[in-house]
Image 1 (cartoon, protein in one colour):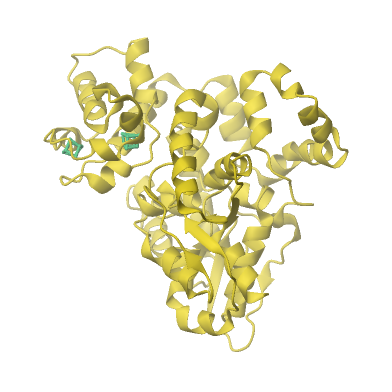
Image 2 (cartoon, helix red, strand yellow):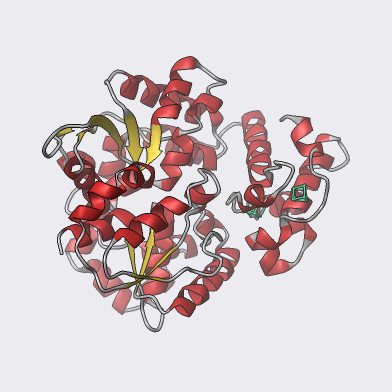
Length: 413
Ligand code: SF4
Ligand code: SF4
């Protein structure tokens, strides 16, 4: 870890009001400033790795709201993540971590096979029985929470059904590669199909290489740098073997990771070239605003937007999704208070730290209700999962959809 990054913190506290865990606890140990101090003291040998120390450090959501607020360029979330990666490299992966992060996640066919029983569980009606009888309570707590988050799965993962090449409609203005995020393909395939159809309608030929692997974000979450680097090398080579103007993704988490491949591979030329080509779908569509506006039809809906941390804080994308929503005639856009505050999903945080995740989520739900919106738009699968469940149970319920689904609704209205 670069010690200079730690000592750059001047302890001004400007990050504190932006940190979700600090806002819930008002504890210095649950603040960005406190976390930087803890890691620094550990590096200086003044603190040992006690249970309490690990608890403080692991309460960080890695949402990086602190980085957006810090005038000195300190990124407490990233520093904590780097610290945990270094510790993991020293300790090695557990058998379970090795199984999930190395033997399952990097293999899309295995991931798809692993989720097949869930489709059966839903299609046979067993899920309805389990939920209506309240049997989730007898599941182990973590399993019960995971099941509770599961929305209706598509008939098949998008990776299995999409064509490797989707031609441009009309005159072709460019060729883009489409990066299929694992969760987007497995669960939110309709949103990703809408993404590809929008790109095609705007004149882009879309290449979706079927052998692509997970972006490596789960490895980063599991503090497995080697696994992340393997994913970065593989995807870089695969996409760079095609002639592409851009590599597009509609998954905030994947986009944030893909844009850092150059960094993850210590500035390797191919990975850096790949990263510079990566665009979130909202970045591409915003450049096509004129052409898109001509195709959109009125939607008389009250809509608000939640900024995924991986899009707003990690990629600095804030204006484009809002501008795209406002292109739709008839839309009543309502700005969400604390729109760029984490929803509490944060990878597997909502399973591992349910109490803090629920507190952070509850604040988000209250803010959404203040807008009076019927629809909440967002662009990250973790946020979609977390917010779909919470807002379907809110009174009144609010529908949660991906940005490209909203645009497609308008296109087809
Ligand atoms: S992390 Fe940045 S904003 Fe927070 S206390 Fe340190 S210098 Fe100030
Ligand atoms: S990454 Fe998020 S939770 Fe962690 S210190 Fe920064 S603002 Fe707080």
